[in-house]
Length: 153
Image (cartoon, rainbow, N blue to C red; front, side):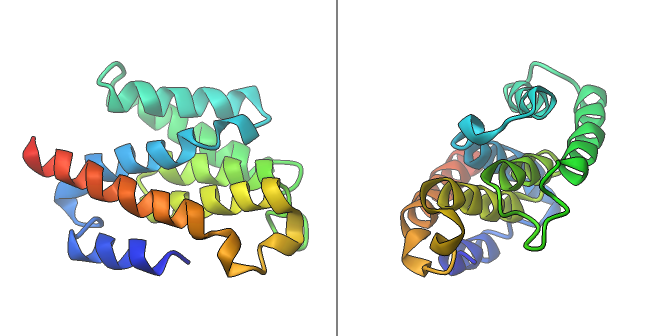
């Protein structure tokens, strides 16, 4: 749990109705950092659709199709039935995509951080809070920057 990110998200009312686009943009930014951990081409395509949406290049209907597909793919990933649910970096990355495309930015950020830690240090690393610190710090900086841009527009 990235407490500083959650605190800032609360301060700016990230979950509020006026911040739907910010949630998508931030979720996309977090997941784009872990795209290299995705294994399934269809999940990569879902992330691409989200990217095109935040750039204004696809419509809501296309995003909705990708949302349903991302959810389906994350829940049927071959590692998602394991005891810990996401012991494989690609599983966490797939869940990050599904959460990002559904506007659940904080959950996407959390899964993205787990994916990076799993990829860098394996299962044992997730028990070390300091393993998350670099990504948590990046996420907070990114949200602050994106929130400033969102407010200015």
